[in-house]
Amino acid sequence: MPFTEEQKVERAQKRRMTNALKEEARAHRDEARRQEWREKGMYLTREQATAGEICRGCGLPVIDNLGSWPGTMYLTDEQRIIYDADHERYREMHPNCDAHRWSMAGSRATHCGHCCPPIPMSREQAENIQRIFATVSERREEELDIWARTLTCGHRVEQSVHHTNREPSFSTQWCPECEITRGVVTSEKVVEAAARMAEANRRRDEKVARAEREVKEAEKAAAAARKKLAEVQAER
Image (cartoon, rainbow, N blue to C red; front, side, top):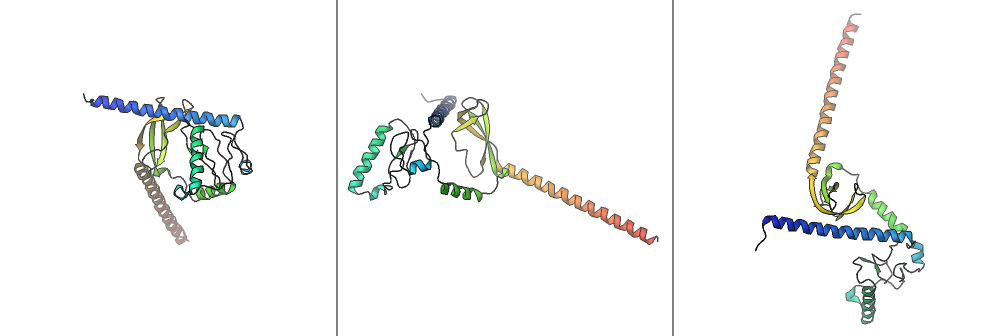
């Protein structure tokens, strides 16, 4: 028996809630792990990693100085054996982590995004990022859409997103009322950037018109003052 439209809507809502709760649980897991890393002092400095200290999460070197792996299609037969063995070991060490992998340039050791604390950026990387941000123009509110996002707790929060983005990209959002990260169930655009831009243009036009009126009034007053001055001078 086919589902009714009401049943389809209800099932879709349940799927969205299930996915949002899953993302929320993942965010809480990651936040708890980062807190654990801080409390246990598991983060390495850039200098410690460069000096060869092992990762405090998995025990492998952060930088093993073996050189980065070439593309898999360029591996030699010997390299392929080592490469496959390393990846098999990784799967055995992190069977249920469900996280990204990371490694350092010039190193073949692969680390787990859930188990292994990341390494701080180098000074050069930070400077490069600063240069990139320095070229970004200042925030222009009239170019931003406003989205209302319904969270798993039922609260709604607003988020501004540039109009070139189809929708907010993050699947979780901080709830200021619950003071905790929540999963996003639905996102609805409530203010179009085009409308904000039109309003900004309207306000600008009003300011220009008001300034023009003030200039005309000032010119009229100046003309009247000059006329009065001329009359006074003529009476002498």
